[in-house]
Every structure is written in C-alpha cells, then in structure tokens.
Length: 109
Image (cartoon, rainbow, N blue to C red; front, side):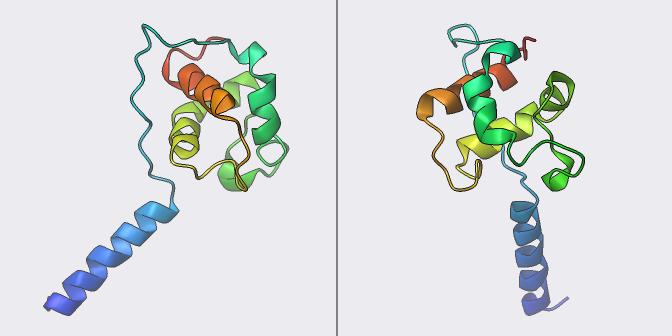
C-alpha cells in the first residue's frame, strides 16, 4: 500500500466514524449527579421527540418511550455533550445535564 492510499484509507475511516455518531459519552460522577427519572424529563424530551419518535425516526433512534430511550441513552448523551444534538441547538444546559445524568447514571424509569 502506498503512503497516499494508506492516508486515504485512514481519512476515510475517520470520516465514516465521525459520520456514524461514534462520540463517547462524557464522564459523570453519578454519586453527586442530580438524576431525575425518565418520567420527569419532559422538558428534555421536548427537544428530542419532534424528530426521534414515530415509525421512522432518524437512524432508528427513538426517545418517545422509556424502553427505546434507555436503549439509545449513552449515544444520545454523547451526541448532546458533543453538541451534535439536538440539531439546531437551543437545548438549555440544565436540560442537557438532566439527560446526560439520566442516561449515564442508571436510567431510572
């Protein structure tokens, strides 16, 4: 493999990984985090569910019910922490932290 093709392969892999939402969830100290149950995340879900609900949500990620939200919680936390979600921004820091704490600290129902 030439150096150019190796560079191209590395670059292609990096771009694919970035496009696929391979963000890492942030570190959270769950012992001190204010963790609200899913039933109290209405403000947060108001930013998620306009797109991530129904029968054909983006990338199959749904947040309109507990089971689906819990299944994609770590990914959602990582994308919120990286500023990737919600698209268009606007989610207050307190709402971001509420979702991240819920997602990474036990996902209480």
